[in-house]
Amino acid sequence: MSRIARDAERLLGASVVAARPLAGGDLSSVFELELAGGERLVAKPGPAAEAEAAMLAAIAGAGAPAPSVVAVGPELLLMERLPSGGRLVGAWSDLATVLNQLHGRRADRFGWDTDHRFGAVTVRNGWSDDWPAFWAERRLRCHLPHVDTELGRRIERLAGDLSGRLPAHPPASLLHGDLWGGNILVEDTRVSGLIDPACYHGDREVDAAMLTLFDHPPPGFFDALGLEPGWRERQSIYRLWPLLVHLRLFGRGYAGSVAEALAALGV
Image (cartoon, rainbow, N blue to C red; front, top):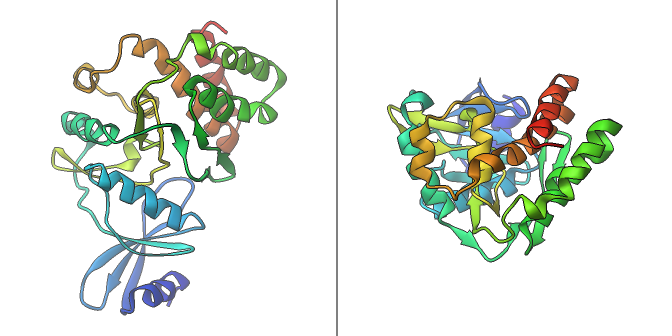
């Protein structure tokens, strides 16, 4: 029996008869567990299990679909197995409804109680009353030690100009934080669950921007979100952060995309 199965049995007080790897992201392993009674659960090991459980609870608390947490320990998260046979291309309308629900959960400030990690990259959070300062320090300048001098100079120039480019006090919406198609489960034409969150409170345009990095939402999707005027110009600023994370995680292949995003912003 695998260690995952043994740890799950201790958390559940029930027998695990099978553990099978599931297709997942690049940074974590995920397993399907079959219990003796036939129930199937999803198991995700890792040191952020308890933090992720809190994020899933926050998403569900906002009224958006997320897998229920069945049990959690310091290094193992057990969740319900949600249906996921559909494709995002047929669910954009429902996703807009889901995000409007999620983003309707607001906080008084920007940030989150804890930091997060994407592999070796730490995502700094904390709390701030100034959104451009939050984005400059915790989503842009934090990468300066990890990029070459030229890119760093351009990133610093943009970071110093954000007060004129981003709203100072947008609604501090609950964000998924890592919203790409692989983290959206779809059944038929409905979103069955948002998974693998990296939640914090911030401008809801961040989630919209992340979706355009690898996916192609139709115009009607953005219309349904009802974003504030000027949102198209801000998308390049918000896309820059995940591009920098990918540059650090996966190498120089993303340097061109970072440079192009900066050029589109005139820096």
